Amino acid sequence: MSARRRDDDWIASLWSDPRTRVVAVEGGKVLVSHEPTPRLVFLPPDRAPEGERYLLGLDEDGIAYFAVSGPLPAVEAAEPAGLRRVGALLGDRDSGLMTHAVAMQNWHATHTHCPRCGTPTELTSVGHTRTCPADGSDHFPRVDPAVIMLVYDSDDRILLARGPNWPGDRRSILAGFVEPGESLEQAVAREVHEEVGLTIEDIRYLGSQPWPLPQSLMVGFFAHAHDGQTLRPDAEEIEDAAWYTRDELRVAIETKKVVPPGRLSIASRLISRWYGSELPAAEPF
Image (tube, rainbow, N blue to C red; front, side, top):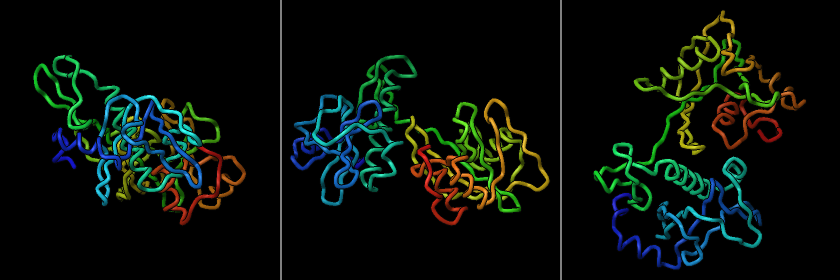
């Protein structure tokens, strides 16, 4: 509905429509009910908290969905929850709405002033723009592209690594932000070389995932490591790194020596794609 976000009369009519549904978001958390299954708790507009309003969109029945950045109200049988905890448990609609709402709140909370002149900006386009009243410039929600890559070798093993601040049993695939002037593929090659000292080839796109923690877009790849190389982890970014066959990974997870990425993440999807099925059940990442 981007073409109508500046139509104030239309927006007002949506807000006054009793069918409209509102999700309150505070500090990256929303209200979730777990009965009978995990789902977002929606409020009618007249019960929504005071705060900035973001239009999330309309469904096929013309029902509008808003997010409001404000205190979470007390609702029976509902509790506050963050995206890491419930994102993978919600249905497609609810997880998408929650991701959108959290991303919007994160951006608005950290981009309150004009980067050109420092004037406090005003929310416009129902949350999808901030406008500077001094110079008239428009500023749009920021998304930081990041690459995440499953590196495999000629023996069909995958590389898993652990960051310096992670618990000792956590392992995941490599990832990093895209730098100015890079293609996504160049970022994949650079990050792998910087983090573990490997050169790679056959970089293939597999999928992407919005990741509003705080404002990333994760772009996933597979990449093949050249033969005959030695792992050289960068001590500042990687505590340790090792290769795993499918059997080795399964045993490591089942014996709790390795906790893989949570199923919400694209990292888990990439590893499962290589593994051939869902990974064995593990503790939360």
